[in-house]
Image 1 (cartoon, one colour):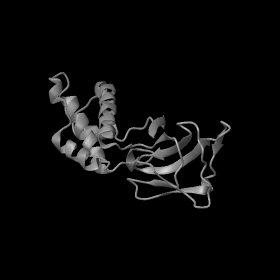
Image 2 (image 1 turned 30 degrees about the vertical axis):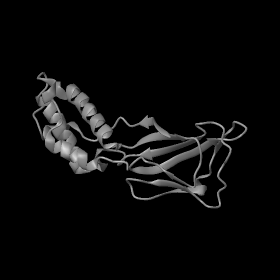
Image 3 (image 1 turned 90 degrees about the horizontal axis):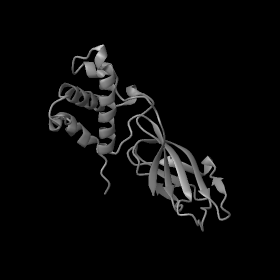
Image 4 (image 1 turned 30 degrees about the horizontal axis):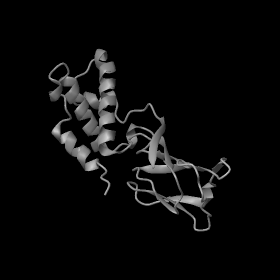
Length: 186
């Protein structure tokens, strides 16, 4: 079971005006600041295992189960469920045969008991589930403490640029917020 990013928005979870609340920027700093925003967002998403702005992922599996734990927080939509049948033909499962259940941090894809699960799937990557995960379409859907964490981190890295790289780390208050949002699998 593995995920692949299929489509990602160019939208960022914070804007330059959010960073300007933490440090002084002029127009010549905008390109550098955008690069730092992208760096910090990437760090946040990697550390917390959360997607901030909605993106489409594909989960690949070797088999069906009536309940499939998605292990991807903030899943809002199943785009499609497809599989390769015994004849090697791709089939799409009718959306009326499944639904999403569970809390936002750990949704499950559940098939109706009346749905006959395909069996004898020969391909190791026979089942492909496309889904959308994230807090929403734009920065306004991101919780304010996450936006503050990112803005604080961007400002810290911006102000420490050109210095010893070990000083351009995520500040401790921001790290605490990141840790609070971190998904830990048991």
